[in-house]
Image 1: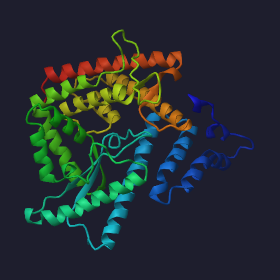
Image 2: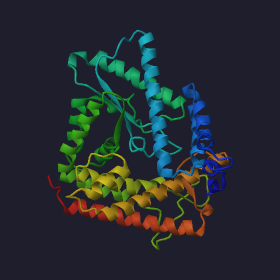
Image 3: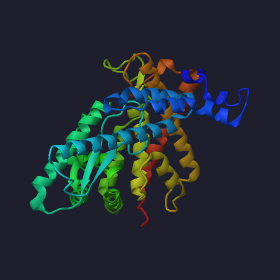
Image 4: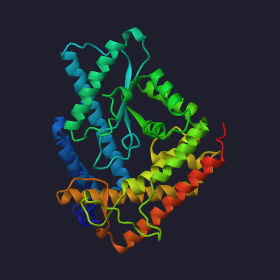
Length: 383
């Protein structure tokens, strides 16, 4: 891991002549320097983020903490993009917001698990209003959605290729419409509906009235866990996310012609996502309101009606954090050699001990996924 050889600000803390104030200045100098150069415009935000992460690595922060800070930074970009869009709309004569609203960030950003290759996943909740006002009010929020998603794209957070963005009607609804959508999606075990619900289940408010997000979160806990057929299909879909191991339990080279490396695995889709999805499934099954994988595991581990023990929760969390570390290390390497940061892990770069631990962790993920599936299929949540 190349950053281990970098000079650490911590080592200058007690350099002679030692004085507490001088030591503090030495320690915080890299942070103060990078924060003083924070981007003045959204267009310069992407390059600054790389420099910001390099400074965080110098402080020897683990990947799970850096991912939280990247998520915080991206949330700040969201708020700035929305504020600039609102200001532009006001100058164009749209006037003030016609209804209360809440912009949601979805996916890894909502879970505080963003790394260096994010795209946009967002949605919009609008307070209930009379149908007679639908045309004018929705037109306003469509313009807002188009404005802030365009600005985020300029800031280095690309538009979602799957169209999971507030600029599209599917992901821009009144609160009652979102609640009705949840009722519809969870009525049976249609694969497409389960996939759409999975996207929505990881959300966090980033701008606007958080009470609307809280109301939607309450609806999730009231509706989803009680739909047995839906939950069964949600468990079955985990089979579509196999880990990167072959039948002999060794790493399976899944690199494609389009991939950047000859021997690689897609660590996001064949390691992190199976684990994250299994934790989400167990959390929804238990009515847990937490969103991040870490907080879900912490809450589930101490929940009185949950079969996940504190020790098992800690073990799963440690596995998750090791996979995050590998992913961040790989992404930093890709950027250093002029590639785009993505989810491909070049397995030829792994030391023998790293490869051993990766196989161990992927085996643990596979066992955990099977265990969660069995729990969901055999137990009814205690209410």
